[in-house]
Structures are given as C-alpha cells and as structure tokens.
Image 1 (cartoon, helix red, strand yellow):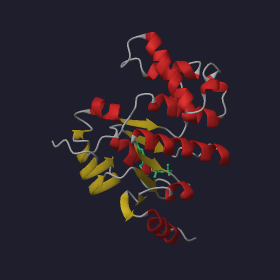
Image 2: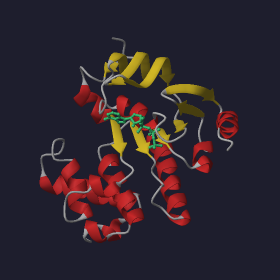
Image 3: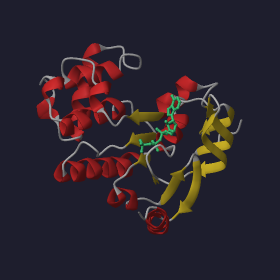
Length: 234
Ligand SMILES: Nc1ncnc2c1ncn2[C@@H]1O[C@H](COP(=O)(O)OP(=O)(O)OP(=O)(O)O)[C@@H](O)[C@H]1O
C-alpha cells in the first residue's frame, strides 16, 4: 500500500441483501474542500462513512493516506473525523467541556492537559462560554458546534461532515461554515461535506453528485450543481 496523501476508492461496491447501495469503480479525492450532493437515499452518507471505516465495502478498497480503511480502521479514524447530522447523538457527557475531554481520553493521559486542550478547542470555535452548560439544554446549533469540537480536538487531517447545517438557522449555519473554513485553512484540514444546501455545496473546490448509488457528475461546483438542478425538475 502506498503512502500517497488523499482518499482513494478502488472498485468499491456496497451491497445490502440484494440491493446495491453504492458503486464507485475509481475515485481519488485530494482537494481541500469537497462537497457531495444528491437526492435522498442516493448514497452520500454511505460514501462519507466508507472514508472513515464506519461502512466497509462489500467489494473493493478504500484507503486514506495509503491506509486501508478496514485493515487500519483505528489509524484511519484518527486522521478522518466524522461529524453526524444529529449532534445530540455525539454528545454523551453532561457538559460540552467533558464531552471534548472524553474525545482525548486515549491520546492525552494527563487530566489537566486534557482540560487545557479541550478549553482551547472550545475557545477557538467561539463557544468557551458553553463549556459548563448542560449539553442537552443547548440549542441544536450550539450542540452542532460542540459536536464539531469533540472531533476537531483530535486534530484530524480530514473532516467528514454529514449534513452539518440542517438544524441550523441562517446565522448559525453561516457561522458554522465560516468556522470550519477558517480552521480548514489554518490547520490544512480536508473537508468533505454531504449537504442538501446548494449554497454550501457551491463553496468547494470539487463537487460530486451521487444518485442511485453512483457518482453521476464530478467537477467544479457550479457545473455539478447545474446538472443536479436539471436532474431534479418536477
Ligand atoms: N445499514 C443499511 N442497511 C441497508 N440499507 C441501507 C443502510 N444504510 C443506508 N441504506 C440505504 O442505502 C441507500 C443510500 O443511503 P444514504 O444514507 O447513503 O443516502 P443519502 O444520500 O445520504 O440520503 P439522505 O439525503 O436522505 O441522507 C438508501 O437506499 C438507504 O436506504
């Protein structure tokens, strides 16, 4: 296996029972900002989950920086962090600070160092004031940012965002996107975002249109979004 930077799909098929969920013969992803669009049930989440090993290919291989996502699942999950569309599912501790500290339990032994790193991460995301609030009492936008913090504190090289702005109002969605983009530039994070928000989808270097379990368009966002609009007339 090579040590090439980037994400590579080789003859990938995901099958459940007799249904083909996703088929990707060949795909290389190296751009900093990639968005994935397409109709409900098209295969966007499955594609994202293949990248950090949450879904295993039935056939073929997916590699991240040369590491096979099945054989080296742990290493892959350290470099590819996943933020789910429902943040409450990602928050299990009473407070945001404890949730972010929990993410560090394997990598930072010293509890005061864990606390310092967690506090710094919340500060960088502009939500230090939420540190000791009750996680379950936060608004969904605030929970979304805390869920992002629990992933970013591990300093992933790749950030997988599954419909990150669905629960957010316009201001919080913009804030969330700006923070992710600023962090992406500062820390050189590759971001792969599945979204139904076509304004968000347009803020990318490359867009994939996934429909019926296949990539049916791939290229500059304006062109791929245009193709999607043409496919979606009712
Ligand atoms: N664990 C599973 N077992 C069987 N089928 C599944 C499983 N997970 C997803 N699917 C099916 O795989 C297909 C692709 O689902 P996926 O969640 O990847 O689509 P999506 O594009 O993210 O959809 P949405 O926009 O609605 O979130 C769907 O037909 C879905 O029903």
